Length: 470
Image (cartoon, rainbow, N blue to C red):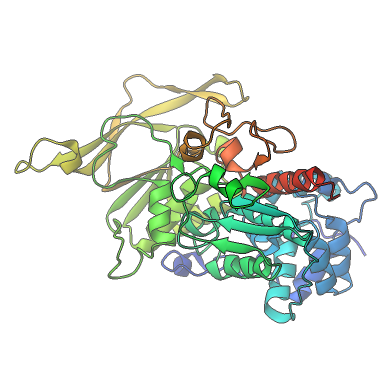
């Protein structure tokens, strides 16, 4: 039978409907489609796709099980390497990782590995009886700081080997960026909760509302009897542009905007945590977080949403699928455009304080692409005399985040680099004995799957430190 040249399409909600609701956009494969897509896999002997996966899932092996309609067998294979398969199947950039290595992709479209992973995980979560074998305790205790993808992966891998693991989360809900950063229409919170319950079934304990560096320190964790600590606290400190007007009312970091919507339910008619819902919105940035913020603004009731990005569509760093979905839903892309000032109205009846002002527009300058920068991307250069004003009521800054300095400032012997990222060895060991770190706390904002890879690497190193082979 000849190989089908294209991936099987992912069914989705229609753009008109989904732009005004928070239900999941991508609807998932059914069993017939999953088997048909699995049959496109060539089952290469050298398995190049595995090298593109940061957690090294045995991709051809689980796809082979789908071909045989053994979906639980496929899930078991994925679970040997990944603690969050339903999450990864939804939000990982497979097109630049495992699928980019797919041999079929040389001539045709690569196998839809992420869609198949999602299908398998959803089948397990919805239809199968979950039976978790609790490992024999090995007598060692490890504390994990942060319940995002790196922390949960580290905790899950250690728990499977019998470690007594406690995860400490600063917010009131576990999941880290998976719950506060990624919107419901891309990653339903029930999916994250299900993955966390699977970890709890392995005896992973999760303590919320605990801020390490305030409620407890790293030193106190060791005093409590923990023998190793993994820091997976993420990169929750938003970056700003440093332009005039950033402290006006109506200016948000994407971090704050998404947290208010995703975690604090600002989308409700009478929310405890309010958020600007109407008018025109400009989102500055071009990554996945910018797409999430723009699409969230539409669903909250914005009249018009703009993506303002200083490079062209070819340089846009967001996933192709997210960009396409945003455009289909009505987000307008203002490319080769860079803000230079946020304009606002100041109430004459109150002191002249910028914080009393409200956003009315952003002043932008048009850009053109010049010579490549150190990363190989053509550097944007301002076009003289091209400034213009874009009337908006809300501005969301989505140009990245940095690691929060709190843990570093309260932990002796923990070195960081110039960007605030914790310095680690290849095994995830920091400059402090028995303290490991990984994910965005080390690299700055990156992908979910790369953070998971770092958590797995650190877990393996912790196991070896106790002479327990991973």
